[in-house]
Length: 51
Length: 178
Image 1 (cartoon, rainbow over the protein chains, first blue to last red):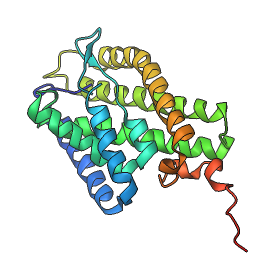
Image 2 (cartoon, one colour; image 1 turned 180 degrees about the vertical axis):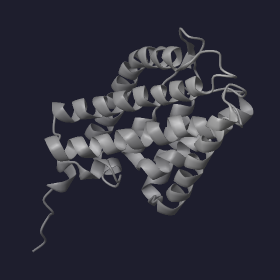
Image 3 (cartoon, each protein chain N blue to C red; image 1 turned 135 degrees about the horizontal axis):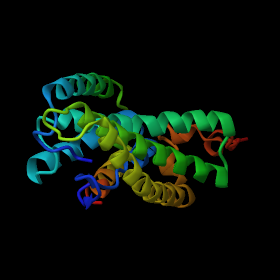
Image 4 (cartoon, rainbow over the protein chains, first blue to last red; image 1 turned 120 degrees about the vertical axis):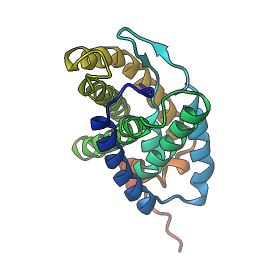
């Protein structure tokens, strides 16, 4: 599902970037992680990097 | 997301994991972690790209994480998931999230016709049909992962913003000290 470089036109990439940046801003403000969840998040990120 | 299986239509399919990440640590944290994974893969492994990073995060990070979480919350309010119903809810939310992410990717590819050869009528069914098979695998993986955590370490899931809304965690009687 990873779309490589050069497959999309500017009319698609720019709106996608705008929507994504809005969601990034919301997420960085609203993210809440307790100390107990820090190892879990590293584990999950590493787990879903591979398959 | 690193192991890509080639599918019919010239693109690839892989497991997402967005549903598991979103359900265990919440959608906002999940978006950040999917972004980290995608940036690493784009820079180090040539999987994806810098100009299409926005589209990839939109597919896998926003649609693939937020839709399962919203769907799970709605189904939890409707059905009060316990036992087998809970596993069915997790499976359905993971499956729908995966297929919707694939449909979004197909739509983006189909809309950019001058650079991508095929239109919407070819790109969307090619992505959706093949990813509905991957979606079943995704659902099974998510059910196994969250089911194991629920049985062995429920204290880990107690603080997650999504799964703590389950009736298992809410009706727990607090020990009274006298």
